[in-house]
Image: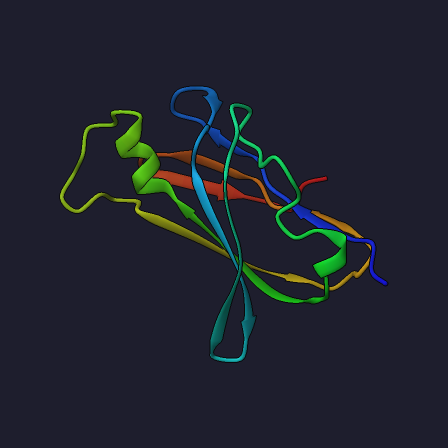
Length: 119
């Protein structure tokens, strides 16, 4: 059985703080289909309280994390635009190692974001 797992950490780089209470949805990509696997929110540290994809559900494949950035920016009082420049931020990535820890952080501001494979 695989022992890998998936985590994230969201940092609000415009304010220099963790992005608390940001909604995240995880999908597995299977050809043209997107299958929802999990939904959760970040805690006060910008992390989820549990692994997004725990070891018992972990498998190689293509996944997508969808971050509700627009809702988060609205909730913290960032002046709105119509439409907001960043609303939903999707990060599609591959998992190839069944026993690895995949950490996909998001560095977020109202007008940009970045990610990388963390540890």
